[in-house]
Image (tube, rainbow, N blue to C red; front, top):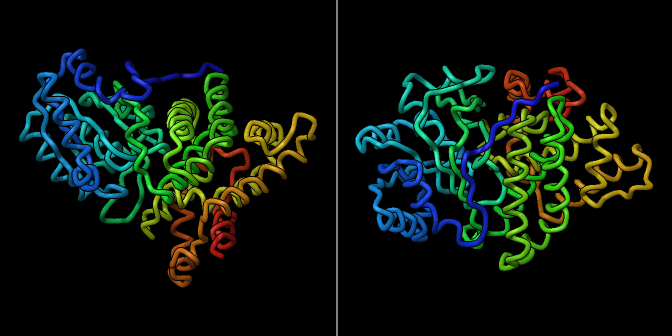
Length: 386
């Protein structure tokens, strides 16, 4: 099998990398970026500092900060207006997954027009689109290095996966100093998101030797450093390791795929407004337990990389230890069940058939080692409610 690989053209990775953003953009021959971020990063002063650095580099940026968590088609409208009013020649996604997803969507819609539903999977979007420069502030989504964006249809509450090279950032600037203020809950949720990316990339039916190496490296790094980063947010070594692992996991799944956890996670986020990493965490142990029989060798490799199993453990033993380790990690990181999170049981039960349908429609479950039926997905939703 020939693997089709895509990565950002330029990557700056390391402490202080954000200081090079202006030079990166100018070096690409761009001058009028739309800086897409959120209200928190404006309030913290981080967006203003970044904008000032762009001005110092001789660029003409405009700030758009009205992004929302889990961006919707309605939330894109003011961003598109800002993009056109500024006559932007590029888009900077500055923040977590939501600002970066927003930036990617605006870059494509700004050139091609139409509606995001026109671009959802299984369509593969080749472009054209404005160049995207991604500057992550969380260690989780990996969106700075992926050819995906996720936008919720405001009319149907469907969380739409949109994919293709049109959404791949031309440049990624990965600076650990931007993550140091993340609160513990965000650290946990984004960290488990990165671990899910790495594990699913490795066990996916679309896995390849290129993605395998990055996925296993990321799994090992996250296994050693997620708990310390969660316990002590000032642990620079742990933060830096998690930032790099999140990017590695992002490259891995962008060049492989995600699978059943992500397919089931997106409808939870769309209907119940649960943060993406948290909904992944709610599902991760149960979906892994459902899937391990179909690829015991691959899941055993993940267990060993995570530090949950040893080289001498038989694959069947290692897979059991992986499931136990994921349960233990979710316990240590205070991951709630949907019930404990405050989701109404009647609404959960009523929406389960629709969520199963939407999960399958996304295409991600088809990449899982054990491809589920709609009934099996409904059973998994019922089992994790708590």
